[in-house]
Image 1 (tube, rainbow, N blue to C red):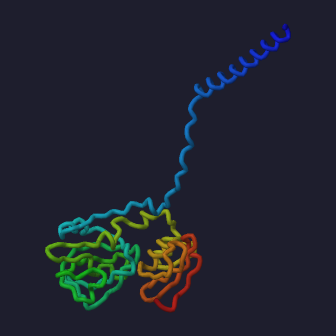
Image 2 (cartoon, rainbow, N blue to C red):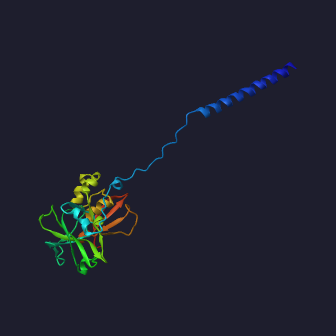
Image 3 (tube, one colour):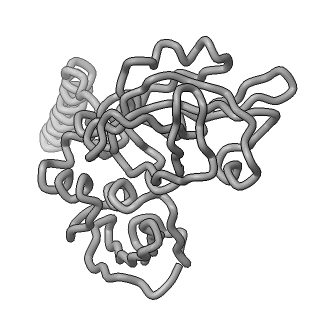
Length: 247
């Protein structure tokens, strides 16, 4: 009998001990400081995507007044032909050149003129084109004035392409993270190994073709003002380049 009592007593103690451990564990779980969830890993945005590009969205001639006397820089390199101007008159019969990427322009004014069909390839003619008058301060003739189409008038409405054609701020500052070596190549309109597609486009112009849509991993041929140039990109870095036979 005594042995039976001792066994029962021992079993009770063991049961109480197990209960005590469990109660202690529950107490610690409920009173332990909350563990903060691990912070989500955020993918770092490329520096180029953090650049703020101004847009002014002009819709009437008066909106262009604020640009007169100020500089603009070319974004749509290799696309826009410009013409000599005398006063407010632009001579469409003579192409003076093509605007190059990151080129600086000093704005002299704006004018309107009926455009021949040959001058409406990039900017529609409407019933009259809007032309921006400018000089090239870094050219051999910095005081010469030219005109380039930047919009048109039709059905009592104006359409402007200034936001698409130009930078309102110096791209050398906007994209200063590109570094002096890349900018030296861009300003001389050349390509160096390691340049991205955007940098190469700034150097050689936006007119290009490719058989692939895999941006940054493809072969791109740039028109390069009639001197086609082929550039191979791997992980958005130029790994090889050469003159091309045609465009």
